[in-house]
Length: 240
Image 1 (cartoon, helix red, strand yellow):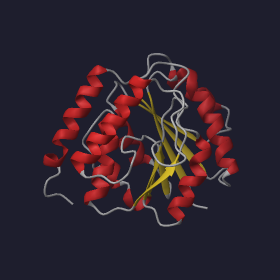
Image 2 (tube, one colour):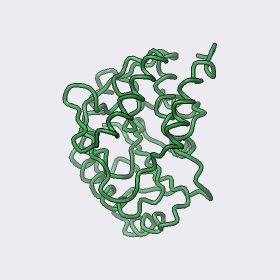
Image 3 (cartoon, one colour):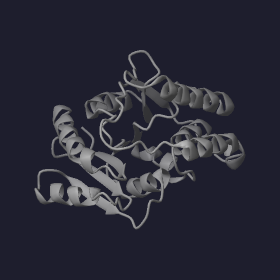
């Protein structure tokens, strides 16, 4: 089995980080990767003490965690670019810290890569994928953003805003070359995959809404998302 890196950005996830670490470790064991993975947590100086909880977990010696800290909240894209630069795995995952992404799906991502996928997307919008506990308003925002981005950028995957992905090492420039911050970062990686002819595969996931902590998605982020998607073709025009 290949060595795996999992990159998780955090900001005020004190309540979620220990359950995530324990679930991830159990999932890696179930996938035959016990002791052969690394978890890179990129914390943007969370005022709630998320980094302190991570340091306590590291001190137990039970988990292969690396902690990267910052001096301010730089943004989602910056956190992932930093984590991917540090990752040593043959396969590198991105995953949310709020327990919405079940680590048990990791084995499905790895299987898809072994079958030829270069970038694997955990999809809520293909057969077998679900979002069981979202409100109508949240579903409307997500599906509307997906529909607009797919139409405007000519993207084939059904879930272009998913934050649960895996990349073969040869394709991590899809992350490192991004320029966007915020949630639109997820679409930029898929747009780069399109213009660089990277094989994208979707696997179904059940996405569970966070139970602890607050969502980072607000009006400001939604407006920035639409503006960035609209200008993305111009930003990458002539690039490959």
